[in-house]
Amino acid sequence: MEINKLIKLGVDRIKGRPYGNPILEATLLLGKVLNVDKVYIYIHGDEEVPDFIAEKYLEMIDRRKEGYPVQYIINEKEFMGLDFYVEEGVLIPRPDTEILVEYVLDYIDRVHGNEDIDVLDIGVGSGAIGISIAYYRKNANVCGVDISDKALKVSNINKERFNLNNVTLIKSNLFENIDRNKKFHIIASNPPYIPKDDIEALQEEVRDYEPRTALEGGLDGLDFYRRIIPESKHHLHEKGLLIFEIGYNQNNNVRDMMEREGFINIETLKDLQGLDRVVLGIKG
Image (tube, rainbow, N blue to C red; front, side):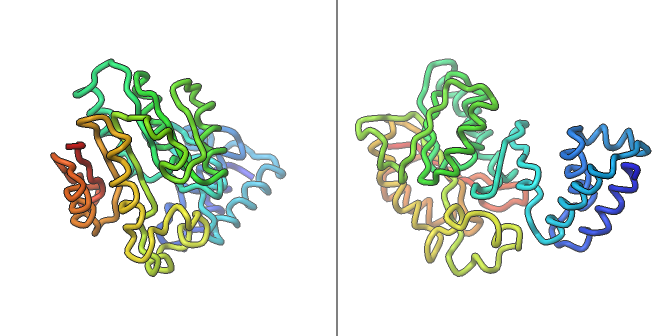
Protein backbone atom coordinates (compact mmCIF):
# COMPACT_ATOMS: atom_id res chain seq x y z
CA MET A 1 0.00 0.00 0.00
CA GLU A 2 1.19 3.55 -0.73
CA ILE A 3 2.34 5.87 2.04
CA ASN A 4 -0.48 8.35 1.39
CA LYS A 5 -3.12 5.63 1.59
CA LEU A 6 -1.65 4.28 4.83
CA ILE A 7 -1.66 7.75 6.36
CA LYS A 8 -5.30 8.25 5.37
CA LEU A 9 -6.23 4.84 6.78
CA GLY A 10 -4.48 5.65 10.04
CA VAL A 11 -6.09 9.08 10.31
CA ASP A 12 -9.54 7.61 9.72
CA ARG A 13 -9.03 5.12 12.56
CA ILE A 14 -7.86 7.62 15.19
CA LYS A 15 -9.51 10.89 14.15
CA GLY A 16 -12.30 10.61 16.71
CA ARG A 17 -9.98 10.84 19.72
CA PRO A 18 -10.23 14.02 21.82
CA TYR A 19 -7.09 16.15 22.20
CA GLY A 20 -5.48 14.32 19.31
CA ASN A 21 -3.73 15.45 16.14
CA PRO A 22 -4.49 12.49 13.86
CA ILE A 23 -2.49 13.59 10.81
CA LEU A 24 0.64 14.29 12.85
CA GLU A 25 0.24 11.13 14.92
CA ALA A 26 -0.28 8.90 11.89
CA THR A 27 2.76 10.49 10.25
CA LEU A 28 4.92 9.98 13.34
CA LEU A 29 3.88 6.35 13.66
CA LEU A 30 4.55 5.50 10.02
CA GLY A 31 7.83 7.37 10.17
CA LYS A 32 8.84 5.31 13.18
CA VAL A 33 8.15 2.01 11.38
CA LEU A 34 9.92 3.16 8.20
CA ASN A 35 12.74 4.81 10.19
CA VAL A 36 12.32 8.08 8.30
CA ASP A 37 11.35 11.62 9.31
CA LYS A 38 8.13 13.54 8.66
CA VAL A 39 9.57 15.30 5.61
CA TYR A 40 10.22 11.95 3.93
CA ILE A 41 6.60 10.92 4.51
CA TYR A 42 5.33 14.15 2.97
CA ILE A 43 7.61 13.95 -0.09
CA HIS A 44 7.28 10.22 -0.86
CA GLY A 45 3.53 9.83 -0.59
CA ASP A 46 3.26 7.55 -3.63
CA GLU A 47 5.96 5.15 -2.43
CA GLU A 48 4.84 1.55 -1.86
CA VAL A 49 5.24 0.14 1.65
CA PRO A 50 5.84 -3.61 2.19
CA ASP A 51 2.92 -5.50 3.70
CA PHE A 52 4.76 -6.42 6.91
CA ILE A 53 5.59 -2.73 7.53
CA ALA A 54 1.98 -1.74 6.85
CA GLU A 55 0.76 -4.38 9.32
CA LYS A 56 3.13 -3.17 12.03
CA TYR A 57 2.04 0.41 11.43
CA LEU A 58 -1.65 -0.46 11.68
CA GLU A 59 -0.98 -2.33 14.93
CA MET A 60 0.49 0.90 16.30
CA ILE A 61 -2.51 2.85 15.03
CA ASP A 62 -4.83 0.47 16.86
CA ARG A 63 -2.89 1.00 20.10
CA ARG A 64 -3.24 4.74 19.63
CA LYS A 65 -6.95 4.32 18.91
CA GLU A 66 -7.31 2.71 22.35
CA GLY A 67 -5.74 5.75 23.99
CA TYR A 68 -2.11 4.66 24.36
CA PRO A 69 0.08 7.79 24.10
CA VAL A 70 1.85 8.09 20.76
CA GLN A 71 5.05 9.15 22.56
CA TYR A 72 5.23 5.80 24.33
CA ILE A 73 4.58 3.95 21.07
CA ILE A 74 7.45 5.64 19.25
CA ASN A 75 9.57 5.97 22.44
CA GLU A 76 10.31 9.59 21.71
CA LYS A 77 9.26 13.14 22.59
CA GLU A 78 10.82 16.36 21.34
CA PHE A 79 11.69 18.85 24.09
CA MET A 80 13.89 21.94 23.84
CA GLY A 81 14.86 20.89 20.33
CA LEU A 82 16.11 17.49 21.56
CA ASP A 83 14.55 14.10 20.84
CA PHE A 84 14.19 12.50 24.28
CA TYR A 85 13.71 8.77 24.71
CA VAL A 86 10.56 8.04 26.74
CA GLU A 87 8.68 4.91 27.72
CA GLU A 88 5.75 3.99 29.90
CA GLY A 89 6.60 4.68 33.52
CA VAL A 90 8.00 8.19 33.03
CA LEU A 91 6.15 11.47 32.56
CA ILE A 92 5.99 12.65 28.95
CA PRO A 93 7.72 16.07 28.69
CA ARG A 94 5.35 18.99 28.10
CA PRO A 95 6.00 22.12 26.03
CA ASP A 96 5.05 24.32 29.01
CA THR A 97 8.03 22.97 30.96
CA GLU A 98 10.33 24.56 28.37
CA ILE A 99 9.46 27.91 29.99
CA LEU A 100 11.28 26.79 33.15
CA VAL A 101 14.30 25.52 31.22
CA GLU A 102 14.56 28.64 29.07
CA TYR A 103 14.50 30.81 32.19
CA VAL A 104 17.28 28.76 33.79
CA LEU A 105 19.46 28.94 30.66
CA ASP A 106 19.07 32.72 30.55
CA TYR A 107 19.66 32.97 34.30
CA ILE A 108 22.92 31.03 34.01
CA ASP A 109 24.14 33.40 31.30
CA ARG A 110 23.13 36.52 33.25
CA VAL A 111 24.30 35.52 36.70
CA HIS A 112 27.08 32.96 36.22
CA GLY A 113 28.38 33.41 32.70
CA ASN A 114 30.89 30.65 31.96
CA GLU A 115 31.79 29.79 35.56
CA ASP A 116 31.20 26.21 36.65
CA ILE A 117 27.97 25.81 38.57
CA ASP A 118 26.00 23.01 40.21
CA VAL A 119 22.35 22.36 39.38
CA LEU A 120 19.96 19.94 41.12
CA ASP A 121 16.93 18.56 39.24
CA ILE A 122 14.50 17.03 41.75
CA GLY A 123 12.28 14.36 40.19
CA VAL A 124 14.40 14.03 37.09
CA GLY A 125 12.00 11.70 35.21
CA SER A 126 13.11 11.41 31.60
CA GLY A 127 15.71 14.09 32.24
CA ALA A 128 13.88 16.77 30.27
CA ILE A 129 14.81 19.63 32.61
CA GLY A 130 18.23 18.63 33.87
CA ILE A 131 19.57 17.07 30.69
CA SER A 132 18.41 20.03 28.60
CA ILE A 133 20.28 22.38 30.95
CA ALA A 134 23.39 20.21 30.82
CA TYR A 135 23.21 19.95 27.03
CA TYR A 136 22.93 23.68 26.39
CA ARG A 137 25.20 24.88 29.22
CA LYS A 138 28.32 22.76 29.49
CA ASN A 139 29.47 24.73 32.54
CA ALA A 140 26.46 23.38 34.47
CA ASN A 141 27.14 20.21 36.43
CA VAL A 142 23.68 18.68 36.81
CA CYS A 143 22.63 16.21 39.47
CA GLY A 144 19.28 14.55 38.78
CA VAL A 145 17.47 12.64 41.53
CA ASP A 146 14.42 10.43 41.40
CA ILE A 147 12.86 7.71 43.55
CA SER A 148 11.80 5.75 40.46
CA ASP A 149 14.12 3.11 38.98
CA LYS A 150 12.32 3.48 35.63
CA ALA A 151 12.93 7.22 35.60
CA LEU A 152 16.63 6.71 36.35
CA LYS A 153 16.89 4.12 33.60
CA VAL A 154 15.28 6.45 31.05
CA SER A 155 17.26 9.52 32.11
CA ASN A 156 20.47 7.47 31.87
CA ILE A 157 19.50 6.50 28.33
CA ASN A 158 19.06 10.18 27.49
CA LYS A 159 22.32 11.12 29.19
CA GLU A 160 24.08 8.64 26.90
CA ARG A 161 21.98 9.63 23.88
CA PHE A 162 23.27 13.21 24.15
CA ASN A 163 26.78 12.14 25.22
CA LEU A 164 26.79 14.21 28.40
CA ASN A 165 29.55 13.92 30.97
CA ASN A 166 28.21 16.77 33.14
CA VAL A 167 25.18 14.81 34.43
CA THR A 168 25.04 12.61 37.54
CA LEU A 169 21.94 10.59 38.37
CA ILE A 170 21.11 9.39 41.89
CA LYS A 171 18.26 7.35 43.33
CA SER A 172 16.88 9.51 46.10
CA ASN A 173 13.60 10.46 47.74
CA LEU A 174 14.00 14.21 47.23
CA PHE A 175 17.13 15.24 49.20
CA GLU A 176 17.47 11.98 51.12
CA ASN A 177 20.64 10.71 49.40
CA ILE A 178 22.18 14.11 48.68
CA ASP A 179 25.24 14.90 50.81
CA ARG A 180 23.99 17.18 53.58
CA ASN A 181 26.88 19.57 52.93
CA LYS A 182 26.41 19.70 49.16
CA LYS A 183 25.37 23.14 47.85
CA PHE A 184 23.83 24.02 44.50
CA HIS A 185 23.57 27.29 42.61
CA ILE A 186 20.19 26.26 41.16
CA ILE A 187 17.54 23.80 42.32
CA ALA A 188 14.80 23.05 39.78
CA SER A 189 11.81 20.76 40.02
CA ASN A 190 8.64 19.79 38.22
CA PRO A 191 7.13 17.85 41.12
CA PRO A 192 3.83 15.95 41.15
CA TYR A 193 1.22 18.69 41.65
CA ILE A 194 -2.19 17.33 40.62
CA PRO A 195 -4.62 17.13 43.59
CA LYS A 196 -5.58 13.53 44.31
CA ASP A 197 -9.28 14.03 43.57
CA ASP A 198 -8.51 15.66 40.20
CA ILE A 199 -6.64 12.68 38.73
CA GLU A 200 -9.76 10.96 37.42
CA ALA A 201 -10.76 14.08 35.49
CA LEU A 202 -7.52 14.13 33.48
CA GLN A 203 -7.59 13.20 29.81
CA GLU A 204 -7.43 9.46 29.21
CA GLU A 205 -3.87 9.36 27.88
CA VAL A 206 -2.55 10.94 31.08
CA ARG A 207 -4.89 9.31 33.61
CA ASP A 208 -4.57 5.74 32.37
CA TYR A 209 -1.00 5.53 31.13
CA GLU A 210 1.32 8.09 32.69
CA PRO A 211 2.74 7.26 36.15
CA ARG A 212 0.46 8.44 38.92
CA THR A 213 3.44 8.92 41.22
CA ALA A 214 4.69 11.63 38.83
CA LEU A 215 1.28 13.34 38.79
CA GLU A 216 -0.35 13.24 42.22
CA GLY A 217 0.74 15.81 44.79
CA GLY A 218 -1.53 14.89 47.69
CA LEU A 219 -4.99 16.15 48.57
CA ASP A 220 -4.32 19.73 47.47
CA GLY A 221 -1.43 19.02 45.09
CA LEU A 222 1.05 20.91 47.28
CA ASP A 223 2.72 18.11 49.27
CA PHE A 224 6.04 18.21 47.42
CA TYR A 225 6.40 21.99 47.61
CA ARG A 226 5.92 21.74 51.38
CA ARG A 227 8.79 19.25 51.53
CA ILE A 228 11.17 20.75 48.97
CA ILE A 229 11.06 24.45 49.86
CA PRO A 230 12.30 24.27 53.51
CA GLU A 231 14.94 21.65 52.75
CA SER A 232 16.21 23.46 49.67
CA LYS A 233 17.58 26.28 51.84
CA HIS A 234 20.19 23.88 53.25
CA HIS A 235 21.35 22.92 49.75
CA LEU A 236 21.41 26.30 48.00
CA HIS A 237 24.34 28.67 47.91
CA GLU A 238 23.62 32.18 49.13
CA LYS A 239 21.56 33.94 46.44
CA GLY A 240 20.87 30.56 44.84
CA LEU A 241 17.83 30.05 42.60
CA LEU A 242 14.89 27.79 43.45
CA ILE A 243 12.50 27.27 40.53
CA PHE A 244 9.36 25.14 40.21
CA GLU A 245 6.73 24.21 37.71
CA ILE A 246 3.30 24.59 39.33
CA GLY A 247 -0.35 23.88 38.67
CA TYR A 248 -2.27 26.75 37.08
CA ASN A 249 -4.02 27.65 40.38
CA GLN A 250 -1.15 27.10 42.82
CA ASN A 251 0.78 30.33 42.36
CA ASN A 252 -0.30 32.09 45.55
CA ASN A 253 0.22 29.03 47.75
CA VAL A 254 3.72 28.29 46.45
CA ARG A 255 4.75 31.95 46.60
CA ASP A 256 3.53 32.15 50.21
CA MET A 257 5.55 29.06 51.16
CA MET A 258 8.69 30.53 49.60
CA GLU A 259 8.17 33.89 51.30
CA ARG A 260 7.74 32.22 54.70
CA GLU A 261 11.04 30.42 54.18
CA GLY A 262 12.84 33.67 53.43
CA PHE A 263 13.08 33.56 49.64
CA ILE A 264 13.22 36.94 47.90
CA ASN A 265 12.69 38.34 44.39
CA ILE A 266 9.89 35.83 43.85
CA GLU A 267 8.50 35.80 40.33
CA THR A 268 5.76 33.95 38.45
CA LEU A 269 6.04 33.01 34.76
CA LYS A 270 3.03 32.23 32.58
CA ASP A 271 2.69 29.33 30.15
CA LEU A 272 1.71 29.33 26.49
CA GLN A 273 -1.97 29.71 27.45
CA GLY A 274 -1.33 32.64 29.77
CA LEU A 275 -1.71 30.54 32.93
CA ASP A 276 0.63 30.67 35.92
CA ARG A 277 3.14 27.86 35.35
CA VAL A 278 6.51 28.61 36.98
CA VAL A 279 7.40 30.15 40.36
CA LEU A 280 10.96 31.08 41.24
CA GLY A 281 12.81 32.85 44.00
CA ILE A 282 16.26 33.62 45.36
CA LYS A 283 17.55 32.34 48.69
CA GLY A 284 17.57 35.33 50.99
